[in-house]
Length: 296
Image (tube, rainbow, N blue to C red; front, top):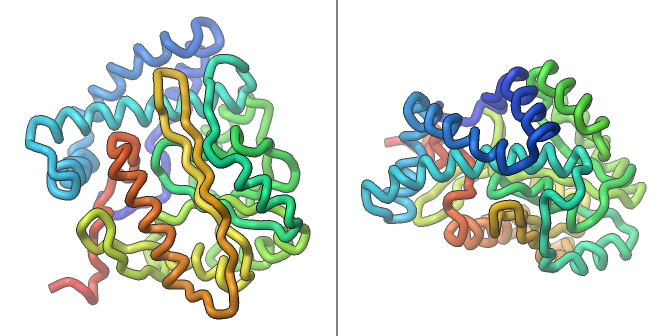
């Protein structure tokens, strides 16, 4: 997979299987099954594993054997975060714990009653971070690609009781931009990630972990266009069933602020987190792939 295709590799059967384990046996037994699942992906998903190897070997500078071990560990931790997300969404209180670092930053931004944008990434579990840092309610909107299989969505919603936030679907006609603007006018919060993009999206090259990589321009252009206050949110595993959740001090956007400045701000912050928690960065594709016109 040379680039992200916007699709989950999970199956409805797989989700149902782990949901059943969670219901009848709990979180830790579900984790034990992950050793087998992670081994399967480790052995038979070469197209994704090779890009993970590149990340650990070339970008993080690990040795060959350590890089191989890290690939397996990363698959295992991804499985844990998916299980944890179901546990938290289903309201199985006490199973997953967290400590917040910067929740007051979100509260300060919300208190201004101008709306705001939470920028996340595919490190750890930013959905859990958002949920722990500030309670979901009708004023939270999550920007998503509508590419997950309908059967999987139905399986998850039947277990978790549905969504506890509004979804804004990213559309080719860009009509989602109007929905974002209307939500901000209602002083609501927009949640989105900014470290992946669909083929054909406008991107810019930014140096990231020692090499230039493409980042989508869209999220940062939205912030600039609406002059919305924004912040970065992360949730990383710090123990078997424990998360550390981070929210940075919110940033203000002025007339002089450029899209490039917002993007650089995000990339530098994300880079620091990736270097600190490399096993929890779950972008399993050619992240440093250059656009065609830049090849050569």
